[in-house]
Image 1 (cartoon, rainbow, N blue to C red):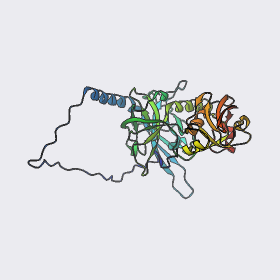
Image 2 (tube, one colour; image 1 turned 45 degrees about the vertical axis):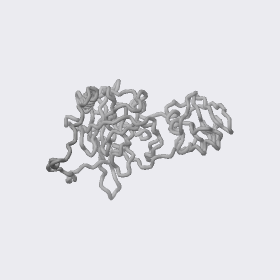
Image 3 (spheres, rainbow, N blue to C red; image 1 turned 180 degrees about the horizontal axis):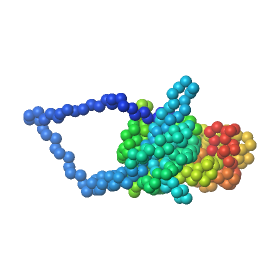
Image 4 (cartoon, helix red, strand yellow; image 1 turned 90 degrees about the horizontal axis):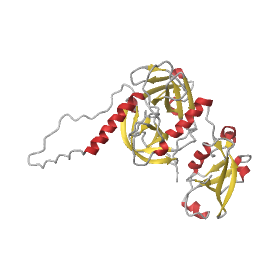
Length: 375
C-alpha cells in the first residue's frame, strides 16, 4: 500500500480580526401557490434522542478540560517569529501533584515555555512550568504550576476501540475554542500516511469527525467520556476538513508520557533493517507468498541486531513472538515498544520457505545515527 502524501498537520492556525466571508440568507420565501408541500420529517425515536443526550453529556463533561495553545517559535534572522496555535487537554498523572496538558509536539516544538500560552476554558492564561516532548510520536506534555483545581479528564483504552463506534472531537479549529464535532471511528492502525519531519511512530485511529487547522492536540473521546486519541492530522488537498482525520491512540500516548516523566526521554527498540514502504501483491507473488501480509526487508545494516540475527534483504518478517505482522509500520511500532535487550523470535519467509531467527532488540537511541527508516 502506498503512502498518502497529502497530509496536513492541524496546528499553524492564524485567526485574526479580518472579516470572514459569510453568506447570510435574509428571508425565506413561501412556496408558490399550488406547489406541493414537503412532508415534515418523522419525529426522532427515543434511541436517537438518547444518543443526542449522550453527546451533550459527554461534551459538557469533557469541554472544560480542553485548552487553547499559542506558541511563538523562532524564525530566521530576517524573518518574524512564527505564531502557531492548537489545542490540548488537561489530565492528571499518578505521582504528579500538578495537572498536565497533553498536546502534539508539532504545536509547541522549538518554543520556550515562556513563549507558550495556555488558555483555560475559564479564561485564565498560563505558561507551562516545564515541557516534555517526543518528536518521533508527536506527543508533548506540559506541566501547569500554581493553577489550583482545574477540570481534568480520564484516559481510556484505545486497544478496545472498534470501527464504527461514535466519537467526539473537541478543540479550537480556527481559534474557535471548545468546538465539538462528532463522527465515528473509520479505521484503526493507520500507518501508510506521510507526515514528514521526525515522526517515526505511525499508528493512528482514523475518524470522520470534522477536524480542522487548530484542532491539533485536542482529544478524541468516546461516549463513556474518556480520551481515546489525540487529534494530529487530516488528509486534505486544501488544508481543511475532508472527513479523513487521524488521532494518536491514547495507549501509545500513555506509554510515551510515562517514560518522558520518569526519564525525560523515550526508549525504543530497533532491529536495524530498512523496510519497503510498499509491499504490493506482485512483490508477494514473486517471493512465493499468496498475500501481502508481513514486512519486506530491503536492507540490513551492519553491526545491528538484525545482522547478528541473520536477516537478509528480500526476507519477509511474518511474525514476532507468534504475533502476525501486518505491514512495515506494524513491525516498526511493535519493535519500538520493546525494551533494549529483549529477545524475540522471528518467523521469516525466505526462498519460498519459512525459517526461524532469534534476535535481541537493540537501543534505538544508540543506533539511530547509522540508520534511516528502520524498526
